[in-house]
Length: 195
Ligand code: SF4
Ligand code: SF4
Image (cartoon, rainbow, N blue to C red; front, side):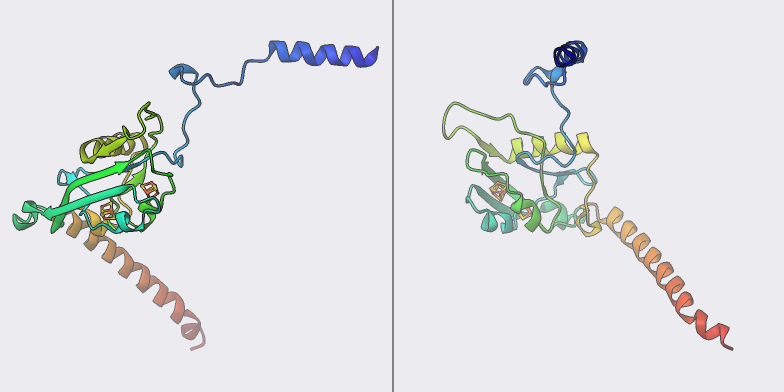
């Protein structure tokens, strides 16, 4: 008898509880995507001088385990005009997203902060080969991602605007020198005290 009452109590509590299920793909009933979520890779846009971060160096293309990427580079006119720190720039890029296994290796090997695993994951198609993303769509995906998470480049050396890059490098150098001089003072303290 007591067991039945306990069971009934559980049923009643469950009936009153707010549903915890997500109803994909209804936009208002989905779960939020975490910042660290890994969707398809996307190319990033450098707002400092309005061009892609990607130099077309092909390192990611060589390392991709499923060989689903291709890229070509070209000379960057902005570099000759001293408006960019990138001598070469991406000319064409394609990722066959149907073959991408979302491993993130392309992001890990890129030394130019040019590619990130975006939050895009809803690109299913009925045709086997219809999911090829070109440079334009990869940059579009990247811009949406950058805006959403407030993305910033990891390395100052990858900033495209030469003036801004020099300024930030000088500031970083100054900070490091201050830090080193503080460390040096701390190191000499025991000697000073013994005098
Ligand atoms: S995304 Fe990075 S590694 Fe790939 S081609 Fe562009 S700069 Fe090179
Ligand atoms: S995430 Fe992996 S499989 Fe997909 S493009 Fe990058 S390296 Fe290739």
